[in-house]
Structures are given as structure tokens and as C-alpha cells.
Length: 83
Image (cartoon, rainbow, N blue to C red; front, side, top):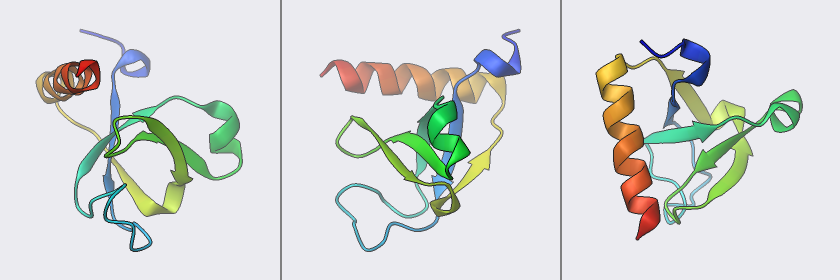
């Protein structure tokens, strides 16, 4: 089993500031580690563009996924980013 610190992290978008192009409400997004951003209330999210950007932490609710779901979503995310 992969240690939790190395598992992909995910969150659900609960606020997008009306920007439906970049973020879809109620959608699960992959988070990337960025300790500097997190210190100032931001999180790094792979958004609809397929790129990672910083967004306010309060716009997302972190979720814990079963290992199998986390791996499957991370694999799909990697495949989509290669396109």
C-alpha cells in the first residue's frame, strides 16, 4: 500500500467564482503539493485546461478516496494530460 503522503490528493470544487470554463462545480479535481501556496491559503489544482493553477483553498473540499479510486483517477489524469 502506498503511504498516504505519496497518494494523489483530490478535492471537490464547491465555488468557482462564475468561471465555469476553468472549474466545474461539484467536480473532483487532483491537487498537487505546494507548501508555499498552502501557507497563504491557496492550493494547486489541475483545472479544466489540464494545467495546474493556484486557487483559494476555501473553494474546494478535500476528500479521502479509497486507494483503488485514487489510483484510477490519477491514471486517467495522467492520460488526459498527455493529449
